[in-house]
Image (cartoon, rainbow, N blue to C red; front, top):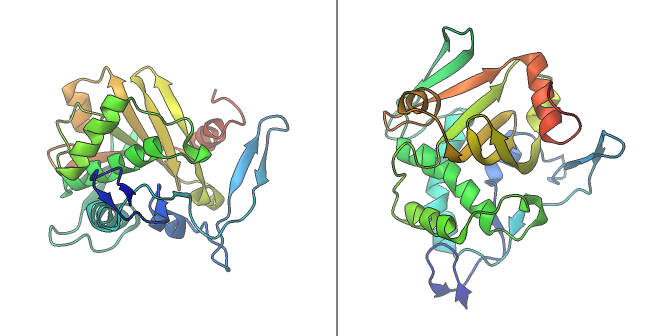
Length: 256
């Protein structure tokens, strides 16, 4: 018996808990015909992408969560994220509505409406929280303060996504891209840009930017991030630019 990281109960813990939900590996076609995970790594000396040793499961930790927290509390959030980002029936709330727009500056984006603010935001925050508590070296750059880890833990347990200004999440989609880049789950990195700081995850052609500190206005957040108005924007990165974003993210060259 040991303590579950989420519910804090002294109970039996699972031998394997995925940090990034397993459906991402399946939907991004990262498993080969033998259900082994295809991993790549960036060699910053040769500046080339190199194959990594195959493994039989996604990246996980052992003995961090109990069955109830893994399968029910976090599992129900994962069940919402999968159809939201990869298609399918979302559940009793009805399906999201996707419409493409171009803003006054010429930037393309997809507006998603009819979504659950709580489920979408908490589902993505659960990945950030799990990455922070993980001891797997894949997530070595993602470390939250003890205070913020605890706050996220309570938010997940109480199904409370907080206000829009609390860890806003910006989603970027790489469009018109080489299909092989859909098959990339890269090591998460620290995020520092003109909007603030936090962490960035690249999951199958989608960048999720988690801002721990930021200077966004409320109007900007309601337009760009997951919103209590039950909507979110997916900002599109054009094809040539998209390749630069990916290569820069995995450390092979800087974006110009």
